[in-house]
Length: 142
Image (cartoon, rainbow, N blue to C red):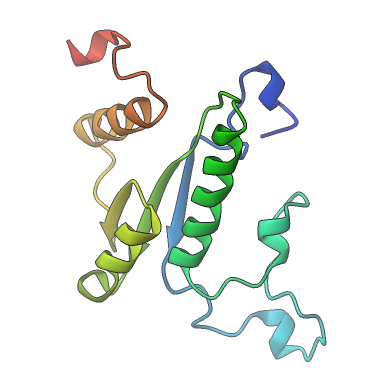
């Protein structure tokens, strides 16, 4: 996403408009570990981002890292399209506070809510507010 629509052209800071993160990242062994790999990496997402290279054990830790990166970028005086951060958990009651404290913009229990018009509009409003564009007039909201 960052290559197709780079930051200099108005793309989002992380290459995505929405990032959905499960709180319990390390609960199951990966195929690589089952196969006996000595690699310290349990997951490697596409691209070469330093956050992805570090071993994250919780979604809240990953969200906190993303938020810190966004804050550092914004403190440098740059304007960017930050991502909407959604924290999700099958153990919602246990995890909702830690996800909220980490900086998640929205928190969902699993299974996630139905993606209908109301949910889409809610997510768009939260995202536009986060980006400082809540004054933007969008016809579907009027």
